Image (tube, helix red, strand yellow):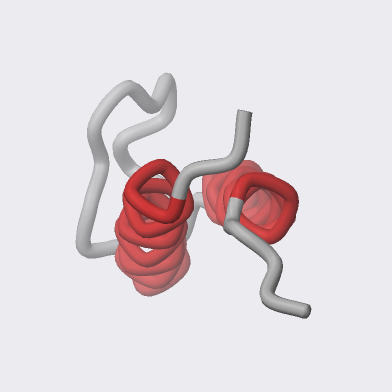
Length: 67
């Protein structure tokens, strides 16, 4: 099923994931971390980067192609 609305939603999810990745990388965000004394949470940053890229790939597959 191809839908531009779903593709836009996935791009929005990707942007949110990239913003969260930056916040975790800078140490600003510390939600759901086991070591709150650590200034940076690179594992969470990597996770959100991967989720953002996966969302962009999904958006590319779900958008309507023009010929």
